[in-house]
Length: 211
Image 1 (cartoon, rainbow, N blue to C red):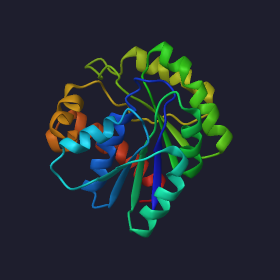
Image 2: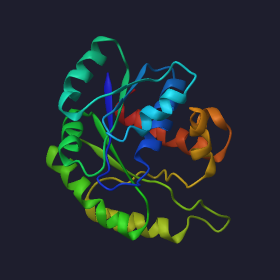
Image 3: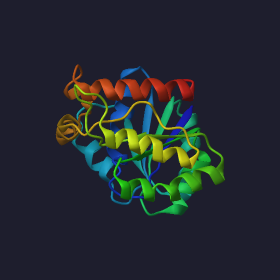
Image 4: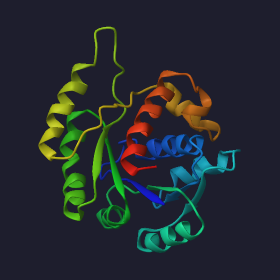
């Protein structure tokens, strides 16, 4: 069993949305997936309650018992656990990072978000868990190429010493529309641009997790 922790100390990074779309994509790959929602806001749980499909499974929990939850998941035979953490909670984020096989750190490309990511990268570096930064909610590429703000964000993020994913997730309506009735983008518009971005990111993360 592998554990993917999704951590962002700043709110609004799109952490929960990324968790949901990746978890459903992993299910589509034939994996047994459990989502663990340790964010008191419970956005992932609210989405799951609207969902008609039986997978992925989801439980709402707390950071201090995450180790027990993961051990139970291992005994139950899950292949992958995706943990959605709360922003502004260094304690839970540290626990999640310590217990994860890989950490995904989403951030928007705006300057305030790039400034704020330092707290998360420092925490992950202290723990020593392998991590990857994912640029999220980016302006989509155009006929003229990758938007300048995305290119500049990649350059700025190099200072943190954590690899930045070559796959950037764009700000597309499909990501939000899919969640309304408990679906993910690969179910809502499986041949669309948003689904292709999640597919590409999943390929990167699944290889790193050796799934």
